[in-house]
Image (cartoon, rainbow over all chains, first blue to last red; front, side, top):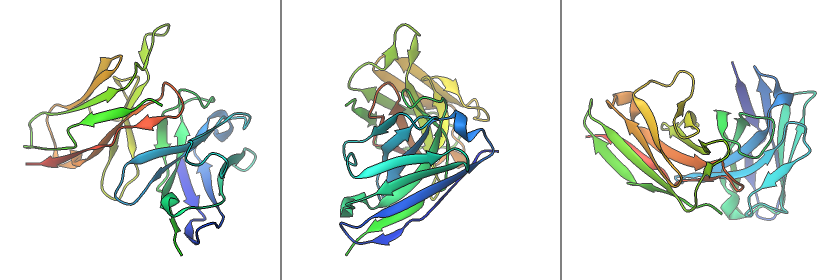
Length: 122
Length: 113
């Protein structure tokens, strides 16, 4: 059974940094692209970033480009999102999501974690 | 960016009746050489993460009941729940996976009348 468990969220001040993680199990982690999708309180879903299975290719939403960095550790089945220069509008539940293919393009998300709340507030 | 627009924003349907959700993309998500529409549907119940229902516009994910059906091609798509059950109360999202950025519709809330 695929399991994705996010951690590392919390309260951070505007302009601050935070790294969130996703621990994966139940599938061959190094064979699939992985993504982060967020959901602001009471709002819809917003794709944030995708990373190919090898870690060579990254994709970012314009809203986070230059501030967020996605990475992975295939030896330990971990996905990360380093978030810098955080803004109030980055406040959201961040979901880790598995893609159905190794490449990031054409990705839909066939498994999701439970989500991790990141709150940016002074 | 491809803009995804769902309609209606919400609907209330009686148990056992049909619910239909529309999703329109601002440009075609049909990859002609493969004859595949790069369109997925998700269900999100209150307090839960989204769950994949359908991909390639009409392929049901494993374990999804056959009362959920996806149709459409190009820019216009529908999700139909043929006989609404109480456990189908949720927000439903379409998502294009044709190009980056991957974009979602705004969501359609389905309730029991």
